[in-house]
Amino acid sequence: MTEVTLHEPLDMHLHLRDGEMLRTVAPLSARYFSGALIMPNLVPPVTDAEGLRAYRRRILEAIGEERFEPYMTLFFKEEYDLDFLKPFASEITAVKLYPAGITTNSEGGVSGFEIERLRPALEAMSELGIPLCIHGETGGFVLDREREFVPIYEELAVAFPDLKIVMEHITDAESVAALDRHPNLYATITLHHLLITLDEVAGGMLQPHLFCKPIAKRPEDREALLKVALEAHPKVMFGSDSAPHPRHAKEAPGCAAGVFTAPIALPALAELFARHGKLENLQHFVSTNARRIYEIEPPAKKVRLVDRPMKVPEKYGEVVPMMAGEQIGWSVAEIIQE
Ligand code: NCD
Ligand code: ZN
Image 1 (cartoon, protein in one colour):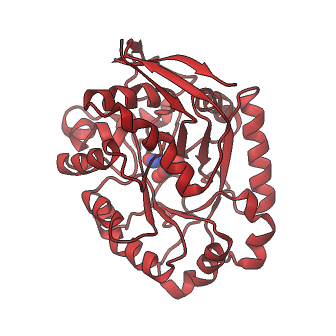
Image 2 (cartoon, helix red, strand yellow; image 1 turned 90 degrees about the vertical axis):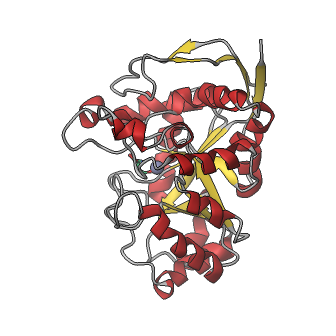
């Protein structure tokens, strides 16, 4: 039997929602991960100290006894400045920027990327050492949206050299290439974008549970993502972008965007890395890189995975996970919290 023990696994891009959904999904992440970067696209979004603190408390309540750190993010607003951010800077792990209307609950996002408009907020963040996470898609043709956004990432990286910029859930070979051109550009990669292309989403019968933003791209894009994930490129981190929607919102005309992967992520990643003979790099991809980039000290937790198959449940509450009803070749054998 082959096995791997991951120390302090981290999910650096996670949607936990609120209310009943939060209570359903938060324990599933808290069980297997030491911490996660929590996305702020609630309705209304998390935009101030009070909202951030209250959301963190609701998350901690939802996870009960598990030892798990919710690393909180604020929803980017152009109005943010040093006076506003400074008093609670130590509680903000990152600020997440959404182009307006580009994805689920992003209506209050940014509608233009002129540097001068963004300067006060981004200079304040640079000074306070708060990283900027970006959902990098333009309003262009759906397969080109991320590629078209790469020059904006690069412009921001040059204009704000002291700001750490994380290209979230990258899906395009062009984003991968940009990583090595700027010292302050980083990226998260999801599980699903390492596994699927547009073919799995729409090449046969339409698969609503694989539909997400950014949409999965071409085989050569997936290859580029796989390469940097498997080699544990030091600027790449695992971020599931696990984004639960109730089944009725997915299996519907007007399918909501988001793939739910949190409870299957570690076994599926272990299987993927093992298949490529790269198990020894998984620790860097799911923890070490993120700890260094975000300068965080997550709570101690070890997760031992073995190549013993598990069957993915059909549903968690009202949410259908990726690979529902299918088998994954690996499973969690033990969780050690000392
Ligand atoms: C996310 C969601 O549902 O909140 N959806 C998605 O398709 N990834 C938002 C996001 O990260 O784009
Ligand atoms: Zn997301």
